[in-house]
Amino acid sequence: MMETFAHLSLGFGVALTFKNIALCFAGCLIGTLIGVLPGVGPIATISILLPITFGLDPTGALIMLAGIYYGAQYGGSTTAILVNIPGEATAVVTTLDGHQMAKQGRAGIALGTAAIGSFFAGCVATVIIAALGAPLTKLALLFGPAEYFSLMVMGLCFAVVLARGSILKAFCMIMLGLLLSTVGTDLETGQERLTFGVASLMDGIDFSVLAMGVFGFAEVLRNLENPEARDVVKAKIGRLLPGWDDLKQSAAPVLRGTFIGGILGILPGNGAVLGPFASYTVEKKIAKDPSRFGKGAIEGVAGPESANNAGAQTAFIPLLTLGIPPNAVMALMVGAMTIHGIIPGPQVMTRNPELFWGMVASMWVGNLMLLIINLPLVGVWVKLLQVPYRLMFPAILIFCCIGIYSVNNQPLDVAFTALFGLFGYLLIKLGFEPAPMLLGFVLGKLMEEKLRQALIISRGSFMTFVERPISAGLLVVAVLVLVIALLPSIAKKRDEVFTE
Image (cartoon, rainbow, N blue to C red; front, side):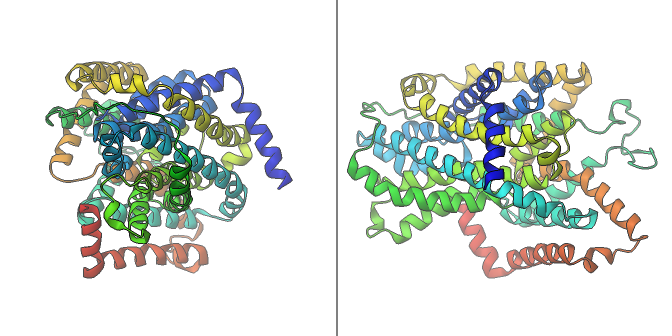
């Protein structure tokens, strides 16, 4: 306990410097902004801003990027409540009751409840990160190459099962990501692989090129084909602070949502997105009058909003302690860390304690900032919601092109980004989810490295993966997850859940 407090004091010393406070504020403000504006999203925004982080120190860069991610969870609820359009995927559930509350003249209460629930959940999730960080890091130090390889296999299996749509399509996306990660030169021999004679591919496909193309450009193309219909609530927003009765109704859903979101956020494979859906389902099932849901039930806002913020922050646990990104945004964070020469994993806490604990402390600071940013500036966000998307997308594309060119000063990178943008758009149209591909791409090189190391140590014997207890256990979990997901009854229920 004393050791954790000592680490936290170190973290606050890092997070409370003027520079890091400014970067945290910038991240939270940008996150709220892109959460409010439908059709951008944190994945595309972080992809666009990755080149900007080159001029920052690693701690400041990650504090800003983290602020964008959990800030988007706050901003997404504003759009969901006031416009009935989820600004972020996790805010889909909030539209069901939040917009109905707004139509009834209770928009301020809905926004206040969402902000308070998110603040509480974010603070609790940060405590969980601080508490589990050291024990999990000590456990991770017991891992060898075989255990790491098996852990990544398990993570990718979870990604397949938790991805929306067909399991087969998700599996194909994972494999495509792994294949793209092999482009470049061989890790040991230096032999060129899949470069097709293109000199710029000798170092492999640039992470920011792939991410910005598949998520940035493709997202713009997808939004342009959707006709805009923004039903901005005309009624007065009203008071933002919930009354005593509202707080009593919201308290238990906030606690349950925080617990559900926190647990699901740790799961690899984008479990954080499922948190709000699971919370809403639980609240509806245990409610005395389930018919209230969908008609302005405050529990339908409090629970899911707490779950999505808790999940967004506990998703950092597997990233910071094990080096395994549980979702596409965390994969981008891995990319940002490697750009700055930091290898994600248990060594981060021992070699870069300022980075680890500085990020943890900045989450408390960020949650407080988000409470201040979101509630008093509701009027500003309402005005922004009235800006047509056709006026925003040229600026988004220009920033994408400038950002990607600035990475290596290579015009070919811009062309590759555009190509990946078209490819990403095609994937979306065909019903493939690009996020598992990004996870496969990020983990591909590390998986290959650990596989080779394990085989060298065992003199070429694949039995090393089942002879070592931890490795064998992780592989058994991976196989069980896939087998259970493929059972006809489970597969049918899974399809129903994602359809809903």
